[in-house]
Image 1: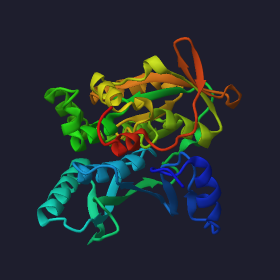
Image 2: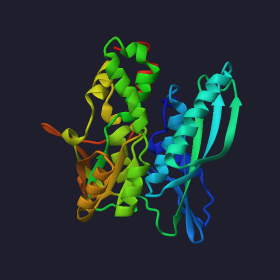
Image 3: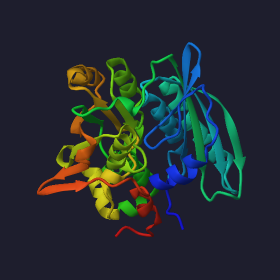
Length: 336
């Protein structure tokens, strides 16, 4: 029986990607581990597309649904322009609840300058809580969008904001009563506020303007999962310094409550940017001018070096991402 969460890398490659038989010449970037977007040749332009579900959150599901797919578009260095939402709601959902979800989605889209251009909404017994699948679309001049294929040994690995950002916000919003036994009201409010920071469109566009080797928004599987996926896609190795990965005190407390790893926790709001050393200062200045925190967390190595997490006293090989840590917390009836 498969675990809750996205399928692991081997199943994706063998069963999902392996059964895609037809390939059209217009498709420039196809499905792959670590690839956030598909890219289609539209003559003088490239159409960049990505789709993602929100199924592990309720409190801010409308805002999350818009941001996660737009973040994927930004990971190609492209600004999103439109989004479609497929909304599946459980029986018993009220008009007020639908209105709140769409209010969140509308506000998030307006903040990003993205138009909601269509989708589908239905009540169905097939779900037990709201599920929204969003598909975002971006446009770039031919040759302007980028994926992870340019990563090379010696490149620097930067992370924006803090690991576990989204997971902390989701758990604070949906499991606040439980967390109140261990965290103060101010700490829970701080964690909830993290969901206001989950867009990485600004940093993605900045990196696109600066020039980058690879980029990946950090979603299921967390920071370590994103590192592994980028390295797998590019055929590179990496050295990641555990002490350099930023994690807030509140996120650490939430992860301690549920006995989960913040470095493997869903982290929309964090962008992993791989950049050559000669572009480092330009990137840092541009991000700082927009008040975007960025931390140098590692460096790209030759594939023969492996994908290593360097910690005090040693190093561990970073494993492929499995089921996200958030699902371990969700299935617990009470905090440990």
